[in-house]
Image (cartoon, rainbow, N blue to C red; front, side):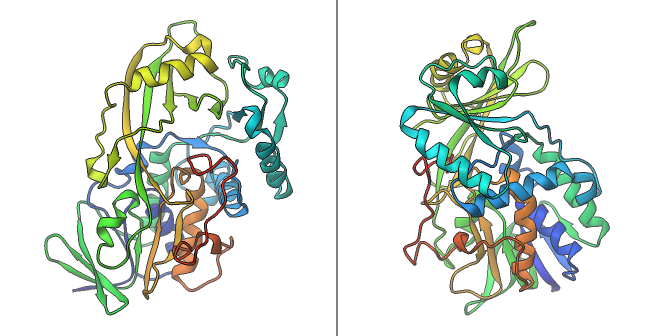
Length: 390
């Protein structure tokens, strides 16, 4: 029986960031487990968008701090790169959401974020390909953009391994071992028992299965799909990452002549367990993106589809993550339910989690993300209603 100070389950963005922060904070003997390859779950499927446009101070601060780490990766992490590219982030909104957008921008500015509300006739300076039909204004962040989740995970793990982290891949956890309400370690699918003083669940959409019988994790799985289109030679690609609240299409440039496109859909299939979510695009998704894309980016609307993939948001009732101690337990922590917001926040989230695990005060107050909040009747407000924009 092996004994560790901390065992982390899941080596994606959250798990890798938390492991790195724990090693940097002198947490002792730390073991990181993954049932597959490091970073090979949902973190490998991310859209790669960096933005700080949120309603509530906790997510604004988390994403701001995370983006600063992305920007200063060489100094902050010391190994590798995050692949961060500040293309700018643009959020066009219709008239009905203009006041909410303006209030969000003002709130973000009060916290020190470089952002502003553009009038429709100013948008072309940022994104000349965008049609302003139906657009009443747009929030704009110059430092928004793109990053690479695979590079982030690899960098954190290389640095943490050099500091003594133990990583075991292809080591599936069958259960979290409990002594009453106290976590005592984990048992692997091969029957091996691993003892630990603290256990961190960083398994995204797989968390409900792992915590079955311990806590009913409060999130649903919502399918999200990314279509890959290829622009013909000579076609100008989008400059900024754009999340259009008018047509509900999200667009970014990718390698070569590719662009990635997401269309938010209200009628996606119900997913019961995370493994039920197929990777290939579902039939009809191409048709779902064509109209919104042509509406907002007319010059891109006919670019041929060359690929894509599906994944799932682990969406909580208020579309905000669960960060902290699992309710009514000791020594058991969770950082999941990111509802599509995790990528740019995970550099900060890992440091927050490390502090919570070590009984220290985190540098960002995450009380509003307490996993027990729904049982208390509290939900974080969302300026645009519950959904991926939060």
